Image (cartoon, rainbow over all chains, first blue to last red; front, side, top):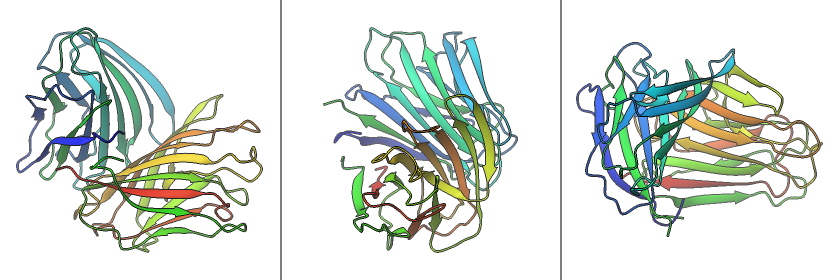
Length: 164
Length: 167
C-alpha cells in the first residue's frame, strides 16, 4: 500500500444484480484492488470476473481452497472468465468478503494477472490466481455471480494504487 | 500510509512481562473498512491470535486453510482469529505477522473478515493460514480486543489499526 491508494468507485446494490461492472477505469494507477462484501440471493455460485467484457476463452486460473474439512487445489484453462471464487455465501448474513489484486492493469504490453482471496465462513476459504491472456490495458472490470445475483446492500469498491 | 489507510492507533507491548490483551476502544465510525496489522509472540505456547468485538464473547465462526510446509489442511473454529502467534519455544525474536481486513464494520449486517497469517521461524514447523471469519452480530464494531490463545503477548508485540474510506 502506498500513499496513492485511492478509491476509484463504490457501488452499493439497490437491487439484486448478477453483474457489477466498473467501467472507464482511469489508466493513471499501477494496480487495482477490488473489495466485495455481501451475499448472493440463492445457491452458492461461483464468482467470476471479466476484463473489458471479453467472453473469449482467454482466461486460466489456479486456486487452492479449504472447506472446513479438506484442503485442495484445482485449475482451469481456456476459461471464459477469471476464477475469483467457487462459492459465495447465499444468505442475508453478508458473510462473503472477496479481495482481488490486479497487477499492472494499464500497460499494453503484458498479459494481466489477478490474485483473489475469497472468504465465506460457512463454506470455505480460497485463494486464486487468474491470468487474462490479453495485452490490452484494462478499462473495465466485471464481477459476476454465476447463475445467481448479488443481494441488495452488497458493496463493491475499486481502489487504485500508484507505484510512485 | 495513504489517505485511505489512515492510522487509527498502534499498541506496542513494552512491559518485559508482556500483557494479557491488546485493545482498541472507541473506534471511530467514520471509515468504511478496517485493516489490522499485527506482529505478535506469546509468552507461552499460544499459536492463535483471537479477536473479539465490542466485548461480546459469542457468535464467532471461522474456516481456515493451512499449510505446514509438508501438507495442507482445512478446519473450522468457533472463534475468529486475527492471525497466528508464535510460541515462546520458537526461534528467539521471531514474531507472527498477520493482516486482517474487516469490510463494512459500521454496517448493520453480520461482520465478515479476511485474514492472512504466518508463523515463519527456523526452530520448528511454521504455518501459513488463511481464515474466513464471521461474527454473527449486526452491531457496528466499536471496540476490538486481541488475546493470544495461551499465555500473554510477549514484549515487543505490536498491533496497528487502520481505517479505510471508500470515497
